[in-house]
Length: 98
Image (cartoon, rainbow, N blue to C red):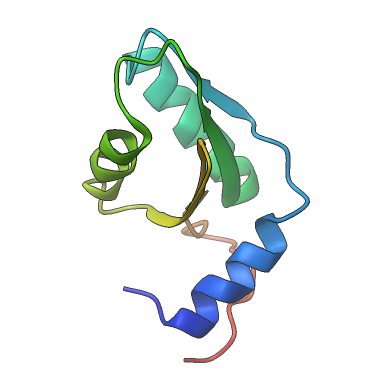
């Protein structure tokens, strides 16, 4: 897991970001999952918006995403989830020491 300090650092970084993935009526389709992976690979830190037509609640979405060992759900603000996954080869984001 991450420390509170690291999470608050990521929250601050995520603040100005716009959501890059929308979770709609497809829920977690293969396509959506792939999109999340691609965006995380590109940016390491992304926002995901849970649309009103999504069959899952934001809590269910967060729980579902938390199951993925590779990524961290940093924050849930309204219907927006902040996700973090460090790049395995060349991480861009430097986390503060624990």
